[in-house]
Image (cartoon, rainbow, N blue to C red; front, side, top):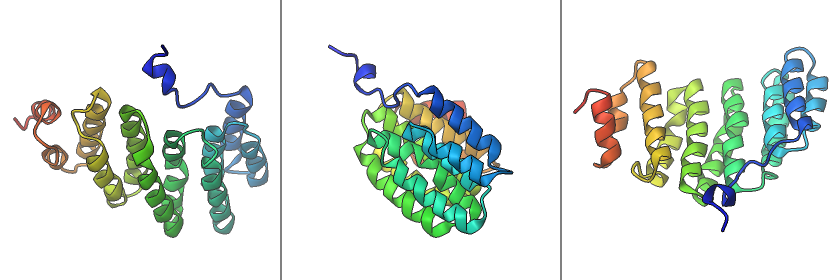
Length: 204
């Protein structure tokens, strides 16, 4: 019988072409949009292709950036499961918020948060949502609020070590940004994770 790790192996081993293409796209993006875009589109694996396209959109002129991000969102649908699609969209959504392309970012974030319900196993659901939260929070903490609400809805803190770590990371980042880590912890239902975090942050 296959192990759970084998059954839920989300990201197949990437081809060398994808690794090289993503790196090349990132290197070229600040100075050669056309070359970077060619490198990004040459990544055979959707996970890396979407990331590469997002790196190109980071530097492209505004109109082209919007078109590239739309392409990235379409390519994300080629990931082989819901985890891949939701997690990799953290890159284009983060770029869109930074570039002021709010309509795209909000639309795709809403779609990703809806799709997150389908992610299995539970630990992967927590990881994908953490990626989305981090990318939104890095631009503006307020942008991460929809992700935070979805995390509370879909990721009970005592599910697994991954969900416990998710809440730890969010509390740590909040604290590092001089925000209220206690508010994160007190939003959690009573249980092992909340008690652990209260002790860790000196709230017990």
